[in-house]
Image 1 (tube, rainbow, N blue to C red):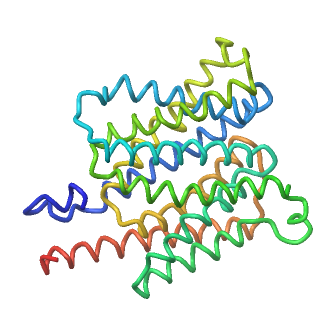
Image 2: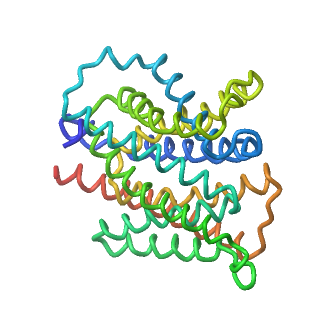
Length: 301
């Protein structure tokens, strides 16, 4: 039971507008940060960039939230640890995939995790309409024909591993939803840093201590970790898992657009159509979720 369900009166079923906007902001920040992070791969590798992203993000959130001020049970600490370790694996696997796959394609493959979770948790017919729209868009977003064979199979394997971790991230993040959002996010990223930092240091070594790279790492940490994961925790605490999963279908579209603008990656007409389909699915899911919440308030369920 989340804290939202413990409240009474008008706050008993909070509007989905704020968590929806929070999730959209998180995805936009994440895609911009990831596009910038890819430029660091030649200097510190995917592993070193992951270490920057998570460790710097954790330091920022620890300083801002000071999570030790809030009480924490051993059970909740275990949930946060699961959330954090999954977060580290998700980031590392995704960045390893990003070495050889276009940003939009890597995110599209990675999104099969939350999409599968959304299918598993859906019960209403309208949910499957939006899931089908998102799935069709994802299929169109991935290159077809000869270009499919040009995709690195190792990169695809890393992206599929990230897909599994993304689904687990949603589940474990929801489990930690009864903890203060800032505390859960800051401690979760700290746990993730304990996993990612040794791996990044082993690969990049002293290069991680270059002052210029540290400044770039701070930007990556803010855009790719501190800001988006804080916003995502707002959404995780207030959105059903299936709604959260379908709304995330906007991220491949945002990633593809960021790849075009920041990395000069190319999209054909079919892939632009795919982006439109994914946005329709996300908007439809958000709209029907708001109507369902309104009905629950009226019936008192």
